[in-house]
Length: 196
Image (cartoon, rainbow, N blue to C red; front, top):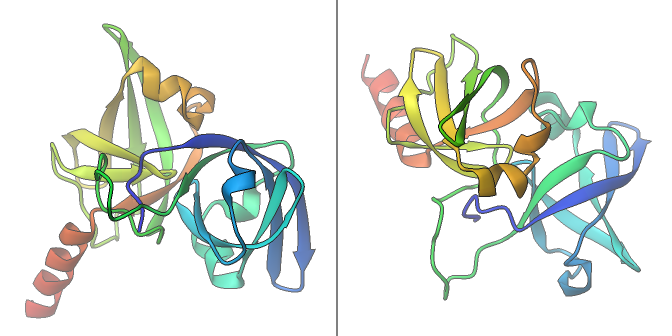
């Protein structure tokens, strides 16, 4: 479990393809606090630490993860949002994030408005998932509040601090992103689908 509060921006140092898997080595500020088998959120994808060497750790992504996330397009030198699993003796500052990506979305608009930045996104219009205004959404592992909700589109407003301390500062129109919809909303949507 995670909160969607990005701890650090890491840098991908190496990507090795191994049959249908990808081994991804990442450098970040908290490597010395990690241990083998620990879960770390990478742009919204929960991955397990499989090795640590000096200031770099490695995680492995399987075929299923590669198929439903942006991870297959990652490149060496790329920045990624990172968060370690939440502690149950701490505050839940974002919202409940599982690290299970539902869809790849796409940034469709970026607008500077009064000191904040509004980012617009779209996702598969065949999806049962939805957003609601003032509801939670996870974009590349960042917990955000929806400010404008459409059928398969939504917008979020990013304060300067969040933009500077996440990979949102690198987004351009057309950037693909990992989306995880609110877990409570997903259960409601599934129940409504079953009752049809």
